[in-house]
Image 1: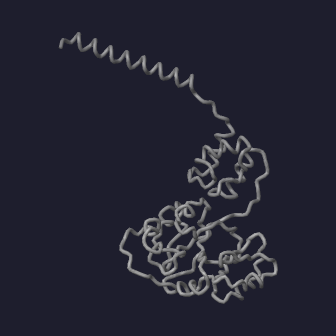
Image 2: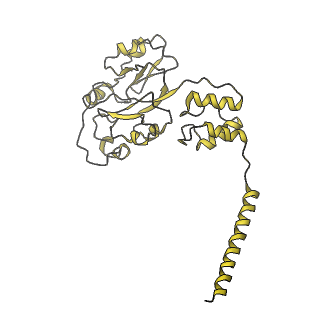
Image 3: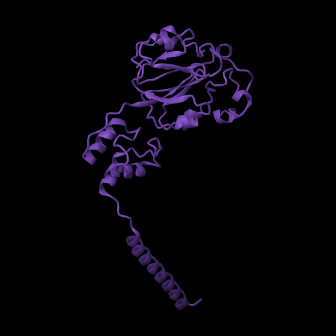
Length: 267
C-alpha cells in the first residue's frame, strides 16, 4: 500500500471516530436525565453499601424515595441515627427517633446442649445441609446447624459461629437483614437493641420431643406466659414468644422457665 493510501485510511478512520464522538456527545446531552440536587446530597450522605436492608434496590433508589417523600430519612439501617440526622438536615425535616434494631439468632443449642444424629460430610453450607435427612445432622430439626452461611453473607463482620451456634454482635449489626434471608431454618429475627429478654428457641415440637433433642429447648409449658405481669408472652405451636413492645424487662419469665430457654440480653 502506498503512503498516500495509508494517509487516506488514517484520515477516514479519524474522521469517522470524530463524527462518532460528536454524535455521542450530542446524544448524551439530549438524553441526559436531570437529577434533583437534593437527591445527590442524600446519596452522598448514605453509606453506599447498597445492601438492600432498607427495602430498596440500593442507596440511589432509597435517596430518590426519601426526596419524593416515599421513605423516612431514617430508612437506612446501616447508617443509623448519624446518617438519619444528616439526611434530615438536608431535607429540612426532623429526624425520626425509631429504635435501633438488630438481628438475633433464636437458638441456644450449642455443641454441649445438643448432639448430632449422624456425621455430615457434605458441603458446609446451611442451605445445602437443609436438604439432607432431618434438615441437617443436628438432633434438633429446628436449631442452628452452625455451618456459618449467615456469617458468609454479613458484610459487617457482625455474626460468628460460637460453639456450634451463630451469635450476633449487637454493636456491629446494622440490621441489613441479609442473615435473615440466608438462614434456611428461619432462626434469625429483628429485635430492638434495647430488648432485655428473648425466647431462644424455634422448636415447635411437643415437649417430650424437644427434650430429647435439646437440653434448653422451649417445651411450651406456658409457665412464662402465666408469670408475665404485662401479658407480653404468648404460646403457639408449643413455642413461647415475647412481644418486645409489651415487655418491661422484669425477668420473671426467665426465672420461671424450667428449661432456661429465655435469655437475658446483657448490654
